[in-house]
Amino acid sequence: MSIPHRRRPRRPQTPLSRLTLKVALLATPVLLISAVTVSCSQEDDGYRAAPAAPAGRASGPGLDNPVKKDIAMRLVSSAENSSLDWEAQYSYIEDIGDGRGYTAGVAGFCSGTGDMLDLVELYTERKPGNALARYLPALRKVDGSDSHRGLDPNYPRDWRKAAGDEEFREAQNDERDRVYFNPAVQRGKSDGLGVLGQFIYFDALVMHGDGDDSASFSSMRRKALAKAKSPAQGGSEKTYLNAFLDSRVWAMKQEAAHEDTSRVDTAQRVFVRQGNFALNTPLSWKVYGDSYHLD
Image (cartoon, rainbow, N blue to C red; front, side, top):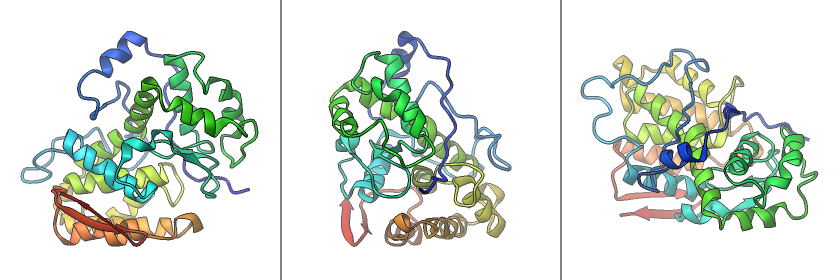
């Protein structure tokens, strides 16, 4: 049994009231910024709450702009699900054989790495007695392994059933934002990166998560900063992003399930070479040999 390296910051255990959650979920459904933010300053060297970017750096809308966020989700979905329809992935669930148990939903929540457990706990706080609540004891036991014990045979069926519930979809959005999207945007802005760089951070966090091991997001960032200055330090955005992608490719090749690096080579590096740091459309890229285009 392979133990996954990908570990996430745990969701705070103090439940928010439904009223607070409803207030947090107002605004556009595309841009769901969680009421709970992650403090990343304790996790990697040199990071602090995102200051204003230096003059002339990372100007214009960030990845948290609703239009840019939708583009980011389509790019991730092309690599994770071979589809640009990211909103169809709330019901997705399968074991892809990477040692992380079941992978599911819009951000690849995994039964073996804690984030699926956090998601189901959040959903159950908001809606007790939901279709997945009875699996919480099993999810706690399989955390840290690739085991399906206590989940088979009906967990995938019940996940797909739950995906028809708007509250479950909102919970997926909130956990995606709390654990992956918001930290990526904050760190990207603090490093002086534009929308493309923030997306590159987001995609890395989705696949690798964060932690202390050599294949985590923070490790990639440290290696990149050791080779190139970030834009916030006065460096070239293109040079820094290529250094980060070099460390990302190394991390991907450490796992057989992720050794195909086309989501970097024929997608993200293409945008870097083009100097499309604002991630403006039209966009054309390839993943696993399949071609995609956004106007």
